[in-house]
Image (cartoon, rainbow, N blue to C red; front, top):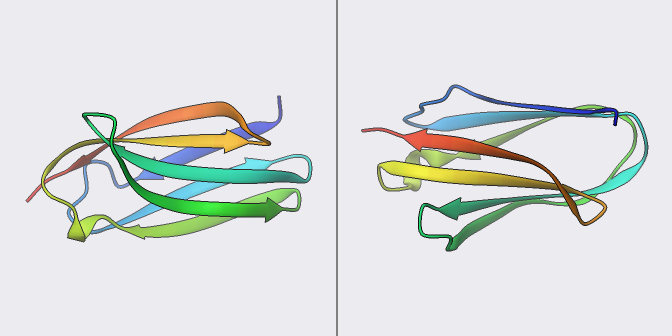
Length: 87
């Protein structure tokens, strides 16, 4: 489907990098959820042209634990990535 994504370093203690590659223009939303399903942050919410896009997220402000990053392209869930914050 022309979409790839990576999240690193994982586990993390601070800045987390997320890379997305899309082959067509689309609206991208990336949200971070706690292990209980509570939305912690809306990290990305905008339209992107085709290409490789990189974003930083300061996970250092989060409590230690497991989180989930949910990536949507044009409203449809395309990727879920586990994120672990350690102290």
